[in-house]
Length: 194
Image (cartoon, rainbow, N blue to C red; front, side):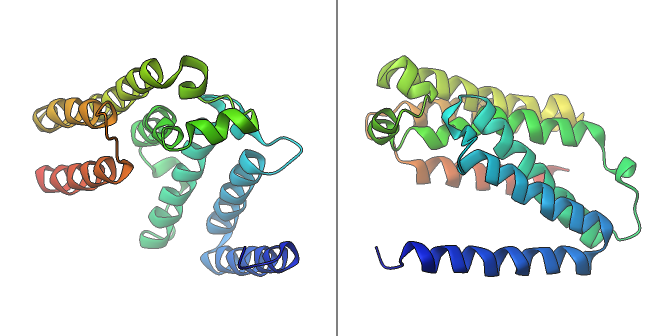
């Protein structure tokens, strides 16, 4: 590698201090959320817990980190707001949709995960059935958006986006970047319909 283990640990410490300082500057909510984000990713990836080895729990931790990042943005843009003012339905949507949709990350390294003993959905079900299962989870994550937001216009966008996501995941020559383009396009169009 380009960096030694000692250099990576040193950089990790610098970035941890930098992020905690940033959270401190944002105020108590920002500091708490930075710490929550950091804790979620730490228990996800670092021993002894290394919960990335446990399917669904791993993506649940990713969804909590996504919620923390969203709330950091919310409190940065709207300082002085109470946590209870953030829409609960949006918080639930972020947690559930990312818990389901983030399983997508496991498709690109099935062989490596199997060797390391990481029990992802594709490793447990095999490539074909794993892709079908992950595709269904991606589809459902899109279809949850209008249910949780209460914006009926999003049904017209979510239905085809979910089906396209399922198709992209199950293509013979699957490319994660195509699904990310779909996610970004969906987000932009959803914001325009609000």
